[in-house]
Image 1 (tube, rainbow, N blue to C red):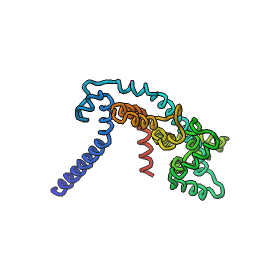
Image 2 (image 1 turned 60 degrees about the vertical axis):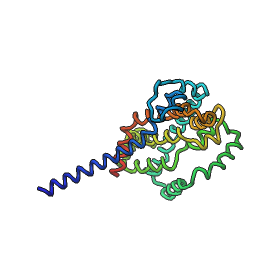
Image 3 (image 1 turned 45 degrees about the horizontal axis):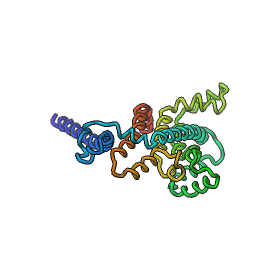
Image 4 (image 1 turned 45 degrees about the vertical axis):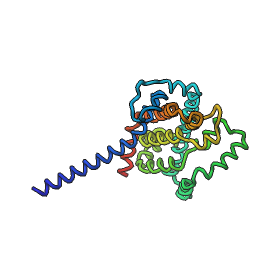
Length: 279
């Protein structure tokens, strides 16, 4: 009896310690976001004279209006268009490539896959100068195509993730579709994609977050009317390095769409994570 009581107390203590650790991690993650949002709705005078932890009093939206007066709205639209185009392109091309690597047989398939996957080990900075020279030679710098073309045709990570998921789809379903007269495109659209919605949603969220936050290549390849959100925020910080309320307003505007995206797709993301853990 005493042993059972000690065991339950030990399990309860471990659970409490785990929840306290998770709570501390959540506070460390969320606190900077909350502090930035509070700063965004403060007046410059309040931010300069009071503690950063003080609540906004009075709350003002002038910082957001000032940010949009600096052309921030166009940067948001350019970033959204770039992100949507790249995400759609990566999903389409990655699905096709992953299906080929997972569900078809051809000579050298596995060798080709692992060679392609090995390109994940190449740092993006290595390809920066060759890409710049290519687009400069084509005359495409500071255009929309310079922002999207290097990333629209899939990625090793996306193809690897989808390939692993597609390998878990029962071959009997694909065989039954073939017997019903379905071609490869029909199998992908009507069998593979509907069964892969959680991992596709996860991949879409990862791609959106990655491209929405991309900085180095848009800084090099795009400027002026094709300036993206991250570059515009950095430029705003350079011009108004003492007006942190404006910088925090721009940062808050950049974060909010990503939070909304996760809230909308959180169920699919969690389902994909659970499937990965089971596998």
